[in-house]
Length: 192
Image (cartoon, rainbow, N blue to C red):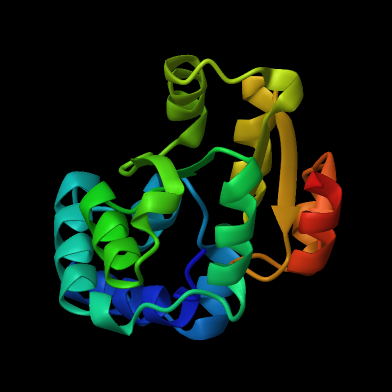
């Protein structure tokens, strides 16, 4: 939802430096950063506990929350989709950061539930689906990373990937999503 990859890179770079890791450039970040984050931070900050890294990162993210914007046109798409579909957010970001950003944009009411802190979405998606009685055959989990695709597949729902987020099309294709969308119009057309 959020066009925050550059911000996330800057915070990750600063976080690695804070915990004594080496310099991280944009290319390294794009090539190596994955969800769950343990592998990335374990490589670059092996002496730091992930809980400490998360605390630092989310504190820094909260300070820059005002910089977060949605991808162009996405608020209108979400408003349209919410008329006919129940929408949820499942994110690695803390839930309070997400609801704060959505609230500031006037979009919080579009979502039935926001779940944050889902560091491995495979652990959180089944419970979210069960809480809301979602029919797997009528549910689509949409994300922008291979991990999102894997989480959707593991939960037995349609796994969709979008190419306007954190990951380029090729790694998303290699995760074998049920659907791959390059623009919001294709997503809307499919759901309609």
